[in-house]
Image (cartoon, rainbow, N blue to C red; front, side, top):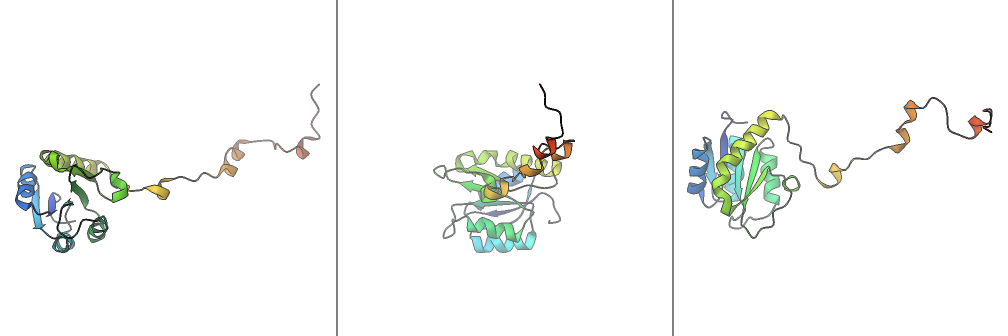
Length: 163
C-alpha cells in the first residue's frame, strides 16, 4: 500500500469534481488521470488504498480494465462509477468493492469511509463468484464417524430378530 492509508487514484474525465468530493471526505488524491492507460500507470506507481474508476472514459469502457487495475494494485478497493442506464450487478463478479451511480455522487465520501471501516474490521475481502462460490459436500463422510454399529444387512444377521 502507499504511505497514506487514505490515498485515492481517480480515473475519470471529471477529475476536479472527484478531487473535491474525495478531499471533503478527508482522503488525499495521490494521482488523477483522464485516460485508462495513464490511470493504470498511476495505480502501479502509487499503490493507493482506493481507486475511483469512471466507466465513461473515452475508448476504454470494458470490465477488462477493472481486471488490469486489480492486477496493478491487488489490495486497492475499486469504486466503479456508472451511468444510471447501466445495469448494476454483483460487485464480486466485477472485482470491485462498490458501484456508485452518477446521480449518487454526493455519497462518494460516506462510501469511502464505509469501505475504509470495513477494511479495518476485516483483514481480507473475499471476492468469489460463480463456480468458486459453490461448496461441494462429500456426502460419503457425513455421519460415519458417529456410528458405532454398521448398517449393512450382512453385519446384522447375528442380531436377534424383533418379534
